[in-house]
Image (cartoon, rainbow, N blue to C red):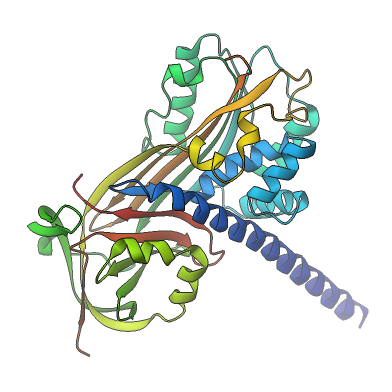
Amino acid sequence: MHSGIFGGLLLFYATAVLCKSNLNIRHVSRASNKFGDAIYKQLKKNEGNIIFSPFSVHSVLSMLALGSERETRHELVSKLFLTNFDNLKKGYSALLNSQNETDEILRIANTIFVDKSLTLRKTYKLSTQAVFNTNPRKVDFNNPVRAANNINRWVANKTDDGIPSMLRSDQIEGAVLVLINAIYFKGNWNLRFNKSRTVRGYLFHIPRQDEHVPCEMMVMKPTKHKFFISATFAMLELGFQGTDMKITFIKPYFNLTNLEGVLDSKTFFKLKKNMRLTLVELKIPKFNLGSVFSLKNSIQSLGLGSIFDSPDLSGMFEATPSAEVSDIVQKTVIKVNEDGATVAASSVLIVVARSTAIATPFVLDRPFLFFLYDSKTEIILLRGRIENPVA
């Protein structure tokens, strides 16, 4: 009898811990997505393809928040849409510690490169290790070429050479610390495309330029997919083998800009609930594209300007240098082909010394939006706009 009660209490405790862990993860996923919405509003003003990782840049700013104090910390937590500092720590810890280290489908890595002349505070070193699984590395930023090579090798390794060159040496001149997040995803479609059916020279329409460009269009025979169609757009979801990751393609029938303007992350997940298994004749272009952003101006426009001008980073270093963030750079790559999708993304935050039935057709033959996300946690890893799949 007692063993039955004890076993029941253990089960109840384990379930309660799991629910709390899931709640903490959900806090981070919502905060990351909201922050991504705000940044994407700025990025979408640019013409052409946009491939952006909200989660990656949110991660490096959250790593910065762990080493900030007073007003700087308050500003970071608020502008990152986190409820409080505790949510940041518990949420990221639960999320990253739930990641399977042997998972070859999705890998998330974080690290710190710090100048050899400086020592990280023990509390910051321990907290970043516990929350972000970092392993700080010493480097000589007085030799920016060698330092950049070290950083690039780390990013290349973590992204399976998807991003072989993250930074130039001139971007880290005067640096004292660099925070890095890297994401790598490689998934095979649940239902693969037959390569023999791929059409070469298929014309993809670009309304903004009123032209057609030839592309390789993958074709799948009528098959059931998660699908939703409205008067102004259609959306279709594809899944990958052995993972909760999904990708949803959204095709506007009229104006992509108008749809992009109202489609934030909350609206996206709300619309997703309308999707039903539908017989679809599917055509999707093959593409292998990337984006490079300096996110400084976009982040400043959100009210986070103080991190670029006299931030309080006294929780980061033993002897606090006069330092500020010089830039936040992101590189992303996405490759979609008959087998599946491969994604690499990395964000680098640079801290410098302050001186320096009937098948419904779904044919992506015109500009479209996409979201790559974890369907379980609803964290958006990548979202973007493809105006030209062969750019």
